[in-house]
Length: 119
Image (cartoon, rainbow, N blue to C red; front, side, top):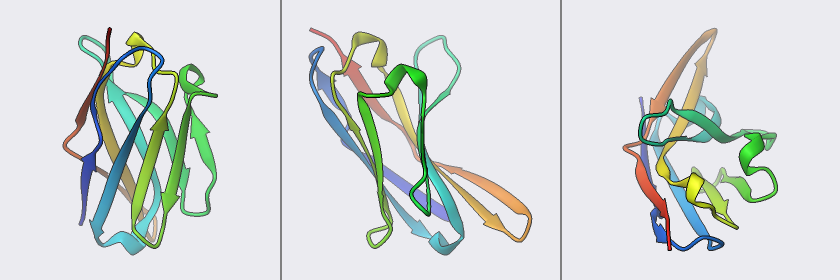
């Protein structure tokens, strides 16, 4: 089992910045990728960014060049630095972790944190 606790959401003006944090606990040794997803009202949940244990990153096209995902394996924490925020970035952001045990993968989710970009 893995538990994820997010923090750092809030209200920010367009062009501003926020940093989200997600602390993992539990059977963290089995985590091989962590990421951030978001879900806006009336839309499906979408991948924002992900990072593997080895540091390989992946970003949605809509956030490339503006968002940066990083991972501190010593602190079991993943961060999402969001710069140049736009109103369309408004959503609930969810931290995720995927574990791999032999050939079985399991996805875990945080409770979500609201990000609102508005003037």
